[in-house]
Image (tube, rainbow, N blue to C red; front, top):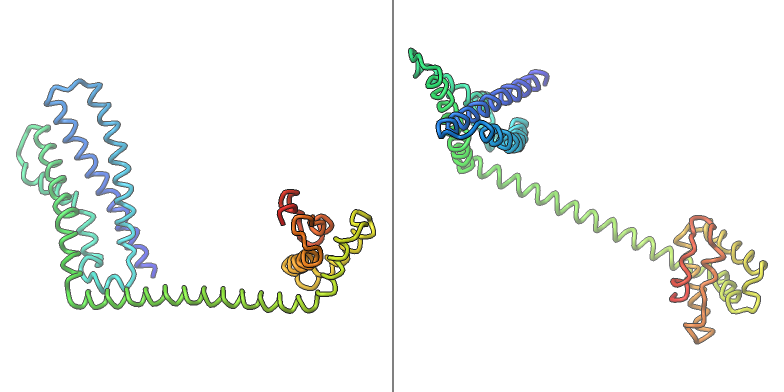
Length: 280
């Protein structure tokens, strides 16, 4: 495991160095082309600054993609028998250096420094473009077309789909179970809390609705409901009491939800706004 981590780290460092060399060569070619076109120095530096920023962003995205490729798991290696090997990855990351070395060998004996550096930079650019943009995608595509790779990929995608469907079914089953328990609890509460709901409804329909005694009685009922089933139980009890009031009063617009006011601070109950109480 330690050896594998060391190899991955080496690949990343070599790739970072190769990318830096590639960017340096591209910058040199761009700089030399602008100078040969008799562009002013201030414009050269301006373009170089903006170009460096764009290149940095593109290279950052590319490094992220390559580093993910270096850390492929065993299943992906089965589908990419060549491009997932350390030998191929090493060849991939040193492509800029190979191009530079080829340019250096091809220009051996040349005395003009500018021409010598230009050929090295062009060799780096050409080799890197060939390996990164043409050879690697084509190789990966050919690997995916192999029967073994296609079979494994189809199996992997089918397993991933089955896992997603299983997770979805598990979530739906859990949700149905929670809803069923909640419905069962509400039915149980309707039987157990019916006397308290009748009492709350009576408090709402009496003339002493704003008295301290009515509030104390309502608070005691709310605290009892909180101990039985928490906030859900209190809501069920409040709904039952409001329903009884409406059945008795036959006037839905004449009922103000004083229960929410009385219970403010009981357990985790919080009183709604006055407009919500009027519309309830």
